[in-house]
Image (cartoon, rainbow, N blue to C red):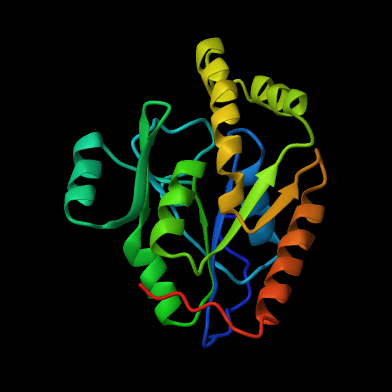
Length: 210
C-alpha cells in the first residue's frame, strides 16, 4: 500500500478540532506509527515537518519531510512561518504554522510529530493541544532499534541515547504515554483512537486557536 498516495477518510469538520502533538525518543518508531495511521485511514491532517537534515534512503520530499537548506530554514524562522523550531543533533526542524492553522480553521484534527524540545515549545503557546509521548518497552530495546536502523554513526547514536536521559525530565508536559512494542503498531493506533474518543467526551472541550 502506498502511504504517500493517501487513503484517509475525508475528515468530518468539527467545532473544536484537536491538535495532537506526537513525540517520543529518537528511534522509538514515531514515523512507523504515523504511516500506520495513514494506512488505516485515520482522518487527521498530518503535518509535514521542515528540516535541514539530509534525506535518508527511502524518504520522499513533501511526504516524510520538507527538506530545505539552512538559509531557507532561517528565512522561515525570520518570517515567523514556523509554529516551533529547534536544533536537534546538529540539524534544524520546524513545524509549518500555515499547515496547522489551515487545517484547524477547517475543523480538521491535526497531528504533528515533534521532538521533546518542540513539544515543550508548543505546550507553552498552545496548552490546549493534546500531548502524546511514545515510549519504548525498555532502554535496551530502544538501543537495539537504533542499532538496527543504521542511519547514525556510533557517536551519533551515543549522543541520542544520552539525550534520552535529559528528555525523561520533560515527560510531565505530556497528557498521555503509549508504549510501543515491536511489530504491534495496531496496539499504538488503538491507544491513539481511545485518546481521541476520550478527548471528544470532555465536558469542557479543548479549544485550540492560532
